[in-house]
Length: 192
Ligand code: SF4
Ligand code: SF4
Image 1 (cartoon, rainbow, N blue to C red):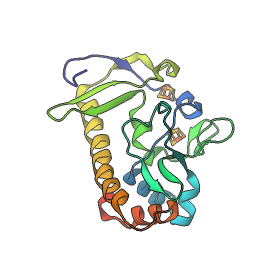
Image 2 (image 1 turned 120 degrees about the horizontal axis):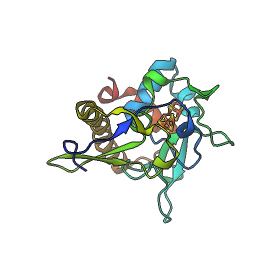
Image 3 (image 1 turned 180 degrees about the horizontal axis):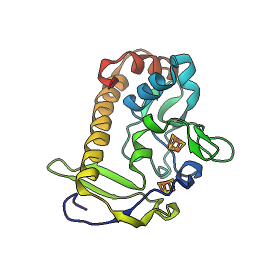
Image 4 (image 1 turned 45 degrees about the horizontal axis):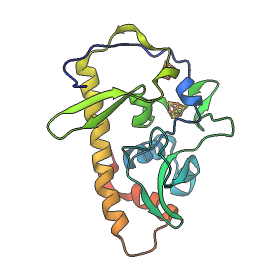
């Protein structure tokens, strides 16, 4: 769908369903990791505990993994996502509220929408998990200018991360998850 020609109603009810959904992995970019580190005042040894590394398999990727590149780690290529508790809750959900709301990852800021950069134009659609969202179809009509602003910010973060991952994955030295996070936090391109 083109950002210019569709109308949709949406208002987040703050129900927390998207934060408790085990199947919805919150993949992160370098900027997401840096924002969380800076927002919580955590160094690389501390912030890495907030993430899980999902090794790439041949089975179909779960929702949330499709547009983010896999990074090389000591265990093989993996996607980085926020850690989930055994219940499926996001590690940052407390009393049904997001503890990092002002610097939450792009996936959280976008849900239940997803954005794609088609080269000449940016397009948007709905998350495959949109059924869990009671805010979709209710409330005021979404302002296309707001959607475009969000799409620009989220897609820019992804593009910068893709460039970084391409360089990282070509590195001859054996990569580790620890050194990856350390390198991300030292990269000026992820500081916003
Ligand atoms: S970071 Fe916040 S908004 Fe995103 S899934 Fe976790 S609790 Fe929900
Ligand atoms: S599921 Fe929808 S309404 Fe509920 S918190 Fe997430 S975005 Fe908001």
